[in-house]
Image (cartoon, rainbow, N blue to C red; front, side, top):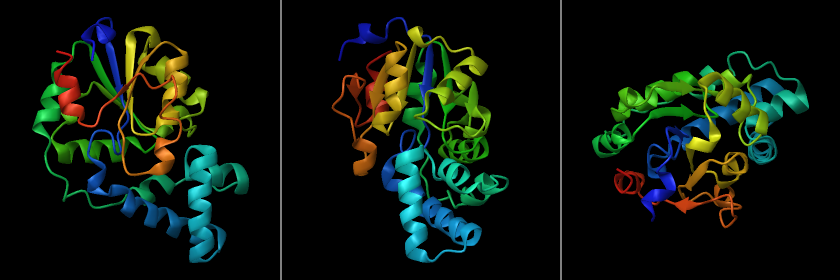
Amino acid sequence: MPRTAFAHVDTWVFDLDNTLYHHSCRLFDQIDIRISEFIKKALSVGDAEAEVMRRRYWREHGTTLHGLMTEHGVDPEGYLDEVHDIDVSHMPKAPELGAAIQALPGRKIVHTNGSRGHAERVLSQLGMLEAFEALYGVEHADLIPKPKPEAYHRIWAEAEVRPGSAAMFEDTARNLETPHAHGMRTVWLPTDDAHAAEGSDGEHVHFVARDLAAFLGKLV
């Protein structure tokens, strides 16, 4: 992997879930259950229908919340807190990854489709919170999720990110399309989720990292 590909990067943008921790932690098993429960209560539907909606809205809208807002006019108030009220105590500390991120030259930020509070709790559990200058949740993009271009533009504007000198790390391959189109270096982290892998063979994926700490260690 050519270190020179990242030579001019001064801002490092990381997704959170299944990117800054290994997907084997299975946090989304808990989150998915809570999302389905929210759908059942909000729309008065059964288990099977709620599960279908959850999956379809994630694929078609970027997040289930955006699908609920767009197709049903669901009030988002309370949603983010409710679906992210999960147990993260089983997650192991990640000192090697934290050190590798801190060693990167320039600014390090998080851009997640989850909430800022969720990012803060997860990174605190991992022991990596201090590695990042700022955390941006979907609420900072007016609840517009990746991969919608507006989501990136709003976060980049707020965080003063210059895409031409930035890099993006993501477990969902389609979320790298807009960063690539604007000149960012892109890195995809494979998981066991087939939907997250869709499009991973496209030109918008510059590099694949199966071990993020080892990958970053080669850059410094």
